[in-house]
Length: 568
Image 1 (cartoon, rainbow, N blue to C red):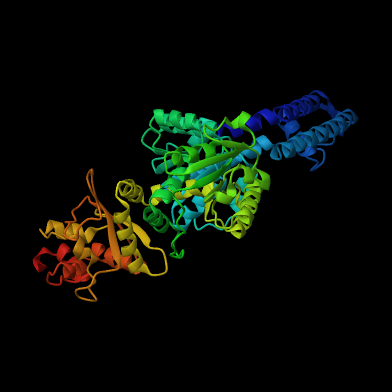
Image 2 (cartoon, one colour):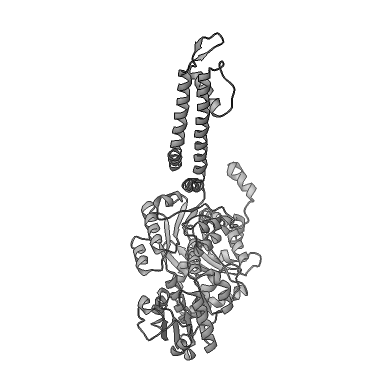
């Protein structure tokens, strides 16, 4: 706000001074020039009457000659004052109109409104820096769950696009350079309701500066950054950035798991899928044989590092080895879009192809050419821009890799289901038989649609009934939560995936596991099973029934008992 006042005073200084000078000269002139009354006596205007006359004369109101008729000399001076004051008023009004249209003032006003909107937020929110494809997907996901977000982006068109979006929550947004700490502070970086700062711009350097500012200005806040540079990622991790997400590394690990642990990959697809998606089993990629990798940039290198230790032969095609570096194995010079290059790479004997260049047109061309030469290929394609979504759907590759969606999905999981990430960390240490058995259990529960995945915290907000039962000396078990009260002996269509108590994590906890205050549980299953479990956690009567206890008094009676001890 101080900037706005300073800007207005600086721009309007000359017009205001001009007005003061003209008014002063006009007043002094009228005070000094004598007048004559009807009797020929000389009289002079006082300062008050002179200022009063100039005030309505300069604004062309024109009340006449007061307090009495002027002399010719006074009228001549008045003519001069009229033209001078009208000129300076035109100059002042023109300066004011120019000021209102000034881009600096508009930006200062926008920053003021943005900062005021953020200060008024009274619920937890996320500060998102960068409104590209990742930021847009994340804001849509958060607002669809009634969660608040604040957005900063340097691109005006993106901010204008955000303001036109039909979101369920109002999202304060600002077009500004997030490298400035003042901009981040106005976005609520130090706000007590700010839960996390997400640096998602396409510039690794900007994301690094945002992470640094967040850790220096608000060390307790969670910081999640996108980075596709190993050097920048290491730099971010050196000052304890909570999560650094490299989409190329994430996908490379996923592709390796797809080749070596098919069932774990299915679990990853099902549990991480969007709600209402269809339950399907992806085509299993061939683990051995020749794989052709087109493109040896950042993406190609990440994939190469993950696959080079597997039992497969890698053949790289790269058109600019002077920029990307020479592949450490056999490679072909070219783009991969020509049949001749693919022929040299042995595409007819290959089992898989990875089109991973930074050009969508080239990747689509590679896929179509290679498929014509070897229809049995397992195809992996990198999609760089969402505007080509329809084209990539039409080409129908076995795996589509989109960097922005990978980061958005990972962040959505971290924010919404932090236990799910820990579940997969533990699941990767299990063997394929364990993963296949869990896939069979999930498939038997759900049939067509993917499972609902949710968490429960056993605390006063999420599970008040269970806390009351624990205070009464009862010991609820996991089996009690999963029991179907409408069908005695049956269980709800849900699976407990993870149980956390303090620092201990139990994968697929047993039904006899005691559920105690402070625990956290991760479930997957049908949507209505989630409602039934939630019902038990918040309603003492339902929980008492599940624990085999006598039915408790109703809500109204309990309220009366709490206020009238004599009724107990």
